Image (cartoon, rainbow, N blue to C red):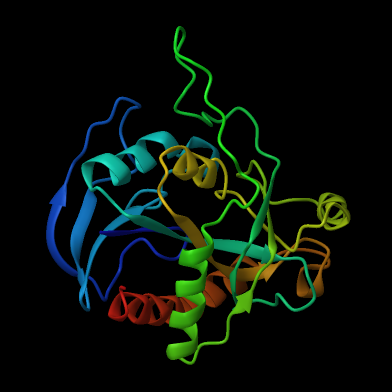
Length: 248
């Protein structure tokens, strides 16, 4: 069972042949919404809208633990593909570009970032040297190639707190730290998947130039951002179709 978490611009999968929906309760509270089960091609798929199906949950308020626990335990997902919108920092990450990042820098704070924080239980450490599953990344890149969709292989994702966008000075700092793109939902989602031993990878859609870059030099146009997401998500769905067509 492949799990897909949809972010901004992807609150539903039009190419998912829905078979059922299930409301799940978890030890960590409620997920962002009901799990939607179905098939894409020959692949069983479960879909969850990260921000809720009405896009009402801001990044810092997403119950990442409940979402990942529900996908791993209730849906028994064997892999998670995250779809997320980002701002482009690196010169080749222009709006409408698709990218499969390979590294993360976490700037978030105050989020419930582990399943192992109950008193009296042993401390659990996970290796996070490579935050994304290499095999699932390879499959995503192969699916993009089969779909004849250009996609950038690699990039460092900076996870910021949100919900506000960053200042130009903050983006300068992120670039100095080695970040190539900036988003608000990459953490703790990726590390929670690692704690659950569920392979996790991301398709990032560049929705806009980050603050102080390109046509965002003075301000970010939300109309242009939404237009970029609308067009790029069509390509994301095509990549997912090819991923599911070659599920092995």
